[in-house]
Image 1 (spheres, rainbow, N blue to C red):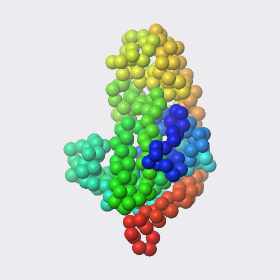
Image 2 (image 1 turned 180 degrees about the vertical axis):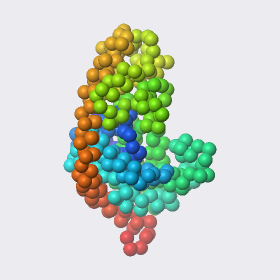
Image 3 (image 1 turned 60 degrees about the vertical axis):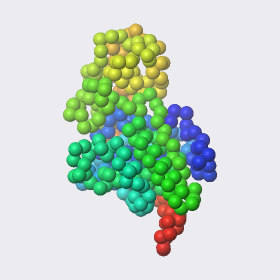
Image 4 (image 1 turned 45 degrees about the vertical axis):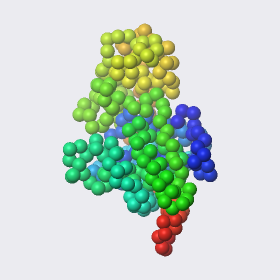
Length: 348
């Protein structure tokens, strides 16, 4: 959110502007997670809109997880949030499984969402692949839980990457159908927020592929736990092409590796692609890479150091998440109570 949260549309009149976003604790945070999410969250925190950030560990178990690894990944992700600038006193930071209202609302939404809607979700097809019959029911119903994650807080804005935009659109469909079926305007229509120079960071070895922890080459990504020397080495070895940097963005067409490195520089420097090319246009990558390396080390090495420190004190991380869960429930519990009353569940 480069210019702050916009005024909600008329459909959200009467709802307090509120940001929600979640990240799966799948381990090994990388530069794509930082530029596409964590940095944006930290920047938005200062703009006065209540922000709720969640480690969505219930989503993580839609595929099998080693329990010890999941606990470690959840704490590491929390450390990444905090080291990247999220203040747990200003924002609400917690892990999803500590707030049972997520699962409660998800079941209501399982009964609202239509099978045809779920069948159109491209992420299930991508993750299940040819073995869809062996995929968990949780993986199939994942989008209904994501809708619950958002709407249990009456969130009006959801920072997401392009690959999650479809799920926010489904969330709006679920909210609209619930409101229509029960003759109410109880749930808002959340808006996806997709902004920034590097919301989709690509591999350092192949500019046509998204940076990913699943890539077998560690050189394809900058991990949030990499030290300064490792960060510098990976940028130095990043794939480029033999041409000089162009003077405008149009000159990056058909040059995915060049575009990726320029995007990364722009995002790390809080600049724009045009501004970066105005400064470096005409220069070779042999001159540009050292500048990018210096910038990346300056921005990322302190985060790596702080994450390592926090991971030596996991009891403190657990306490922060517990306090965040209590604050989250203060918002979620009344929403669930009203939802139950609207649906007609006795004893709510």
